[in-house]
Image 1 (cartoon, rainbow, N blue to C red):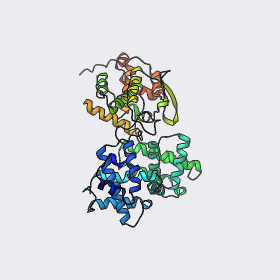
Image 2: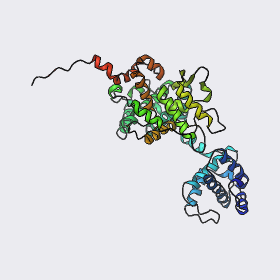
Image 3: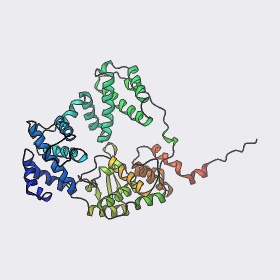
Image 4: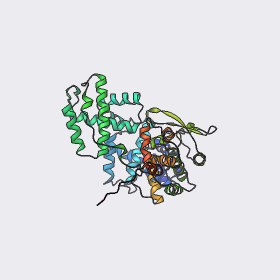
Length: 415
């Protein structure tokens, strides 16, 4: 397989020598299957062979490779004088290549996944139990779960692991200290995580019954601002910025249309599967917060964009997810952050300036567009999957035509 990248007999013999040699051809096949560029794959293969020589000189085997040994190899690259290193002593490619080779060896059962062991050992048992319970009973996504467990771990680190000794004063002091060091949005997320963790402790009977009430709230008026959205002309420019026939542009266009026509969240799009689309009925099934599933109508232009993307979509082992990364390795988005990045890049290409740059900008745009076309608020709430009409009422402030009808004349002031 490495003959696809190297032709010289000496290079082939050198790469297949050493303890990395028996795995080099398999690694090359994996790189080709995942869509890595030819030049990138060459650098990664050289780095894999170089790692084998380094490990062998240390008197170890590939089974001994762990985070400590990888870090030592990356430090070795900074002053490497190995005769077969091809002068690639520093930079992104060698370090990234050895990490990718290590993951390949873990998948083949050659190495243990020591990185997961280190992560598990660093997380307190109580936080792990909270994470498992919260995922099962609330159905939260992994990004949300990481946010909640991060707040719980920080609380344990500061107040101590004996939660029976916690009191309201200590909890409030912790939050006020953290709030003085971060912004309002971060503080709000920490408050939510703290309350959830404290209620879990109360449920287990390990903390006082009223301890969650000790978490103070910060002043926040959800309806005090106007929703950030694009105009109809800006939305057309944004979608036009994804014109093209490459898989990346076709994917971006389909994503933008889903976000702007149906008001989906970034996580909804990232988790969308091919089987969620019912082509005969013209609907798409969306699994939102709390694993709540709903079927939404699939507009014609959205369906056409999805079909064009699926015709040139990369072929991967995990073919269930609809949208994949446009650069190697071709795999599904890890979270909704990748979808928001697609929107951010499209805004830059279209030359559109906006304070909000993520996928939620198009969710707000979809709601305001429906409102401008006379769709009632309760119907908009159904499309956006709001649990309360109060959340949908947030968009009523942009219906300027209706507001002019109910606005009272301002009384003149006599000087």
